[in-house]
Length: 341
Ligand code: DC
Image (cartoon, rainbow, N blue to C red; front, side, top):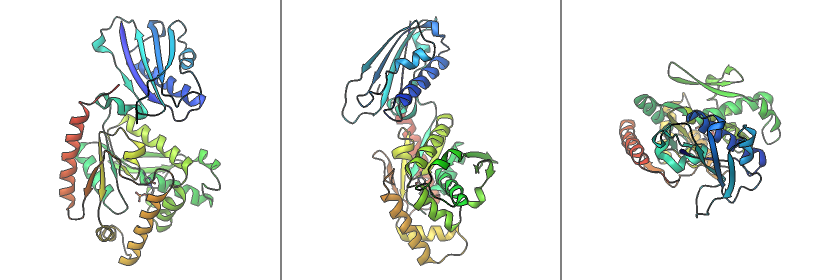
């Protein structure tokens, strides 16, 4: 008999969220282990104490698992452990040996078994102008990972709202018609907004301001983009940069780097990237963006506890890249040896 473990987190303590999460987890377990419903003998679910809106076993019945014995229990409480977590152990008989069991950990629960991660994630966070995207692009190329510029997604959302001449604080409902996607053309990230390539429209002053002041402060926008960002990371090895990657989007990332540099260096770096612009104006713009991005209510810019802090003020791009590559190799090796439950 096989025993297969798995875990997933529910977005909220809401009946449909719990059932959707349990269903996703069971589907993955069944698919990865090529099980039929009839081969499943029993499933034990546990939930953390913050989930009480539904029994996850109901999801199994919905999937047509009718004959297996099911049981739901409250997980033991461990201080500071993962919240809103659904764990399962599935017992099945399909002629395979235990060494062939594929255990499945999804969403934030990937953090429980970093050793089983099916993809690799490197999270790079830091303030504006610090050189995140330059570094992330160079690393992605070197490692053949996908580079995901999450700031560009917030910028595309700004373009969407600017075209409608409204803001999320007034009009969250139009969010359901906003479709943002990413494609890679000759290895370069292109952002599509409702099917239109808007990559060239993302770097104007107005978009920069709106993305920080009007768009990224809204919780519903953040949730929508979070889903998209995680979906990419579940399917690809990624270097993802932004403000909340290590803390919120990919807390399970094997490697987290927080880049920093003093304001003078960042202003010079930004001046180097743009055409025109004077020192004082660019410096002020960066300072006010830093303030907004690190003081907003939802997922503000902050260093994840387990992120490595890198002050790049006196480092060349090559030096930063070399240091980051060392950290990534080391981080991946450590994560391969780390698993909880
Ligand atoms: O990285 P960028 O300058 O392109 O980002 C534009 C804005 O989007 C930034 O000021 C804050 C917001 N942002 C965010 O809130 N969270 C992210 N992960 C990335 C960007």
